[in-house]
Length: 311
Ligand code: CP
Image (tube, rainbow, N blue to C red):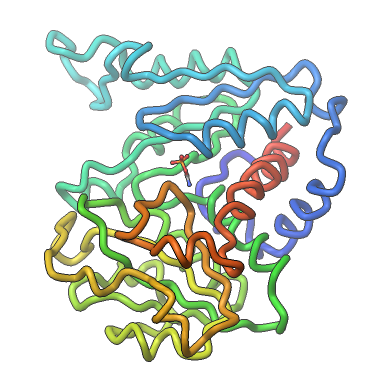
């Protein structure tokens, strides 16, 4: 596998989900990656992705190198043919090529600017990196998708589902800052690719790009959407239509215990980090139906399944 940036890179996700579940039972297989190196390049902050991917590589016996490029690297130029007499010091062409020489697999995290949808959805940084890097590339969350998170989420659903086709609801939640659509886009894409029923609840104007939601039911009424849910995935995202915008007066979209009265057995998911009592109430987060820590743990095995197929 040359790249892991979307569910489209692996086809049906069931094989990877089963592989991750198998790895969870016997995670430490240090012979597989001995002598191989993983490089992780971060343009943006991270706790889970940074640590779980390193843990996965170490379980496989790999060496790991991490570069926070904004603090530790040169400022990168993206434009071909640029006359680099300004603030940029290194072209992505050389940076990606050099990392490809040093590393057997390279992971890259690059968030959107949330100013211009067409620009962000081109995935310029990720695609240029893939173009110039001779080693396989893993997305550690890009402008439009977070595939390692989605694989861990689907694995968590597989571990907890009680019926073959559970009702899965992705619900928008409030947040004081504009956030990318990547986690929500990716979750929708993976759930639909896995053949599950998906309902997406969001305020009007916060519909995700149809590129990711074909086949999902879209609802603007959260209580109706949540009725009889088996899994509720809670996430904020900024508007795609009014690109990158947020809106005030939507605090009632926070998921609290009262919202679960119509679906008391529903499992609640969030990718973390989460703002308590803004996105999700303490009661729900700390309650028996919360899967957030299981999701975070499964990030290790999801990453390990992907690395396993690349080395
Ligand atoms: N869920 C997730 O990707 O967390 P981090 O941003 O901390 O890596």
